[in-house]
Image (cartoon, rainbow, N blue to C red; front, side, top):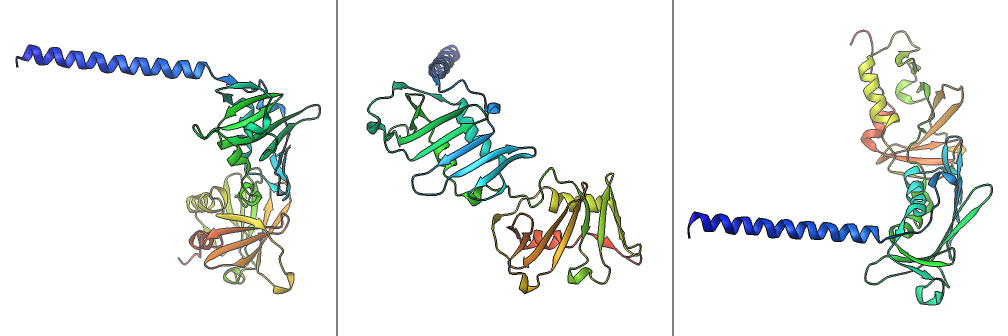
Length: 297
């Protein structure tokens, strides 16, 4: 076969591939443009979310000065990523829009879930029914119309309450001024207290030194960025005599953590929140042992 024939065949194949690519892209764009907005509501318009289940306690969130908080069934800082996934329901689209008749056909007469978004003057309710067996999307009822939306909204909203708590032991808005480790066995002799002010680290005991870069690394690897692997409500027995640490915030408030367990995980009970945070043992060890040096080191 001549080189010209080979070149012509290659060009023909290229044209066919490009044609298929353009056709499919146009097809996708057409499908996307044909989708129907479920609502014209804005995510920022609401400051409360209530999620109702047929056979378990309601989960409720409110937006406060420092972000979203769960108020039912547990009082705690909320995992805001989760909350915004639920809020995304307000901006979702549907492949269909049907008149709200024959609700039993779509499982909407006996819903698996109801979500109500509210503020001081309005409430918007979304009712969730069965899944479409072909697309695995879910039928919902909103303002008298039936839509078909991603099943991910219902799955996210159905997480158990403990999974919806912010996993950080110290909130992002809580600015640390001092760590008081003096009641832990390894720091009782030195009465270790580490101060943090104006991006600088100092130690109350002048016989101990701390390297600024190492302190910043320690803070970033432990108390600032990492999240706990689990958090749950907990009732501490004060008779046990658990060792504790205090964290003083820039606003003067004090947070006390009780060391409930060291191995195989570090478990810290935050007294004011009544929550137990669990950390991997290696991370937990580093959290309670900052990088300090004596002058002789």
